[in-house]
Length: 238
Image (cartoon, rainbow, N blue to C red; front, side, top):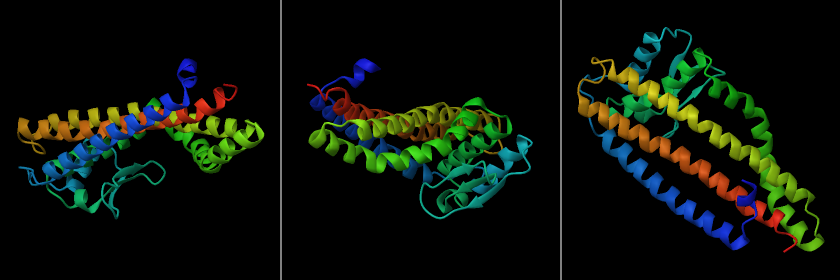
């Protein structure tokens, strides 16, 4: 890792561009897939809300509510309020995509109920990461300016340290997201009354895989940004 941080400015810049391009492709592919599967009616005729409620019930979770929130792709589980929050396109829709997303968010509720280690670790990091995110907004650019004009790297070092925490958080998020999808797909596979064909299940699996890839490229993007700013810090004597 330390060797990675010692790469040149130009190499770090090229790394950021490369990750940004991959991220754009993944995001485009994910939205395309979601749109495609959102137009595939679920043979069972269940809405995203109904799918979520069934999965919660099957996992003996009775203290979590399924609610609708504004926006597109704003679906998430809130452990503080114990709510599965679904966007209108998922909450009301009776499509393969809606079922997959609703089950995925309920996967997080199951993680919470089962005290899944990675979710607990991620939740514990949230307060610290919120502070770190705020610090990175002003310490990085100011730090670089101070480094060039005064050769003082203290502020930049704070920014890089804060960004390292944000990057760690993005990587901790990965097992949480993959596990939630695995729980969702396992439940869907065992519930013929929700998804009635193998084709529907494969479509749901494909949709959740591309969704997971957006988290992967986000983590890589955060790492590339960390390497870029760290290159200024560690190469300041070049």
